[in-house]
Image 1 (tube, one colour):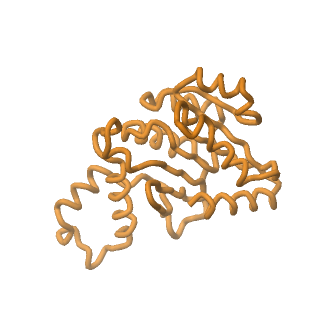
Image 2: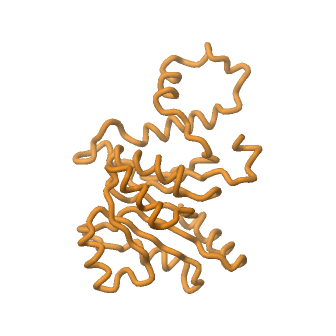
Length: 217
């Protein structure tokens, strides 16, 4: 999924002599595959183009410091904060200046954390036309990540609303099942979602650009 979009973003940045500002939430501290392993993936995709402006965050400030001391964050900006606290997430926006072209949430994986992070970064941190990736969505149905509800249920509700957005007739309100109406009310579609693409375990939400009037009005 990343390859479908990031190479295009990279090539466009090269043509325009611009930087791609990217934020990854979660460094993988303590994971068996190694802390900061995905940094190598992003650098491989963007290669020597010198177009990547990478920012990373994690709840573990000591882990960030250790990785930086070991040279694992060379050329990368880092911030610490807690996804359970919206004020910490807003602090990331203020510290970085926001306006990210790409955001990857590979952090705490509980629905509460994903929801907090999305609500702040979608509205205040992601640039128009930006891409928002959410990883490991299957985990909310497993311990210890079980939370208020699986975030996959939220995305399913958003997809249903996107699919039915233009249906006015014969899709009258009284023909829509009550269960569907309740889900729409519980998980209303956020403003500015252009489309949603999902694969195994992860989804990407594309944000409307300023000129996407026909599909985002």
